Image (tube, rainbow, N blue to C red; front, side):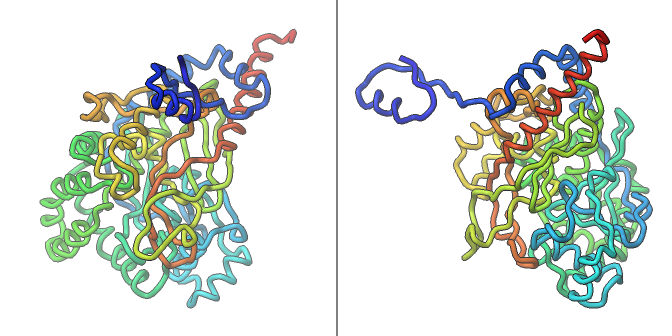
Amino acid sequence: MITVGAGLLGEALDAQAVAHVAVDWRPPLPVEPGALARVLADPRRAAANGVAAGRMVSARPVLAGVRRAGEALGLPRGVFLHAGPPIEWERASGPMRGALVGAMLLEGLATEPHEAERALASGAVTLEPCHHHAAVGPMAGVVSPSMWMLEVRDAEHGGTAYCSLNEGLGKVLRYGAYGPEVLTRLRWMGEVLGPVLAATLAASGPLDLRALTAQALQMGDELHNRNRAATSLMVRELAPAIVTAAPEHAADVLRFINGNDHFYLNAGMAACKVSADAARNIPGSTMVVAMARNGTDFGVQVSGLGDRWFTGPAGLPDGLYLGAYGPRDANPDIGDSTITETAGLGGFAMAAAPAIVRFVGGDVPDAMAATRSMYEITLAEHPAYQIPALGFRGTPAGIDVALVARTGLLPVVNTGIAGRVAGVGQVGAGLVSPPASAFTSALAALAEAAGEAGQAKDPNM
C-alpha cells in the first residue's frame, strides 16, 4: 500500500501494523494552464541552465578591497540604497523607515528624526535597491554615500559586488535604530574601521572567500545565520596585516570584529552576489539569480528574464523569539541576505550546521531534511561548498523556477527576525517561506518568453 500527502492515513496503518510506503508528494504550484509545459518544453532551457549553474558554482570570489560607497558605486549625495525589490517611503516597514532616518542623520541631510521623516516623505531622497548597483545589504540594507563597502571580485568571470560593513548586534542601523549610539558607531566605522580595512587589504592582497567559506562549512557554519567559524577564520587571516597597517587602531578594530560573530556575513553576501551575478542574462535559463526582501515585498530575479522583479508579500518568519518578544512584535521578512540561499548556502546548507537549530528552532533532523529537500529544486551541487554530514556532498545550488512550480516545494530560508517598530532591533530568528506568487509570476513570464523565442525561430507561426 502507498500513502501520499497527509500523514494521518499512514499513522493509522502503522497502528494496525499494515505495511505501506509513504511518498512525500505535494501538488504543483497553481500556475496558468500550459505555462509549466511551455517552459519545460523550451529547447533552450537545459543548455541555458547548464551554463547558468556552471557559472555560479565556478565563480571564485575574493575580498579585494574596502571603499566608500560614493566612490565605489558612484552614489551621489541624496541617493540611498536599500534591501529587496524597489519600494517607496509610503510602503516601507518600520525597520526600513528607521534605517533611512538614520542615514539622513548620518549624512547631515537632517538634524533630527522628524525633519528626516518629512524629507523622506516629500521625495527629497532617491531610493534604489542595492541589487541595482551590484550590491547587497543585510536587513534594511540601507547604504548612503559616506558608508564603507566591502568590494568582492570574481577572479573567474570578472564581476564585482559590494556589501556594507557589519555593525554588530543590538541597536544597529540595519534593524532601524538611529539613536546617538548608532550614529557614533557608524561614524567610528567611517573614520577608523573602513580606512583600516582598506589599508589592510592593500597590504595583504585579496582574501580568498571561496576557500574560506568552504572551510567554514566544514566547521559548522551555514553562512547565513551562523558565521562564527567564518569570522574566526577571517580574523586569523587579516589580524597580522591589521597590526602592521594600523598599529594605533589595531586593538580597537580587532576587538570590534572579534565581538561580532556575524562580521563575515557581509563579505559572504557579496561573495554570493558576485557568484549569482555571473549567471545573469542567459536567454532561456529558468535559474534564480536573486532573492531579496524589503520588509514589505519578497522578490526574485531570474537569469533569462533580465532585471525584472517578480514579487509577493514578505512572510512572517516562524522561529524562536528573544526574551518577551513574540510574533506580534515581528516585522515581515527583510534583507538581501537571502542571496546566501540563492547561491546554495544559508537554509540550503543547514545540514552542515546542526547548532543552527538552537537559533532558528526545530531539531537536527529538521536541518538535515531541509538541505536534502533543496536538491529537488536546484540544478547543481557546489563543488567547493561541501557538507560533511552528507558524505561531503556539495550544497544544493541554482534554484530552478520550473522545478519549484513542478514540485510545489519552496526554497528554505533561515533568517533573523526584525522588530516591526523601528529601533527595537532583532527580536528572534527562524525559518520563512517565500511567497509562491513570486515564482508563479516568474514562471508565467518564462512561458511567455519561451513562446516568443519559438515564434522568432519560426516566422510562419
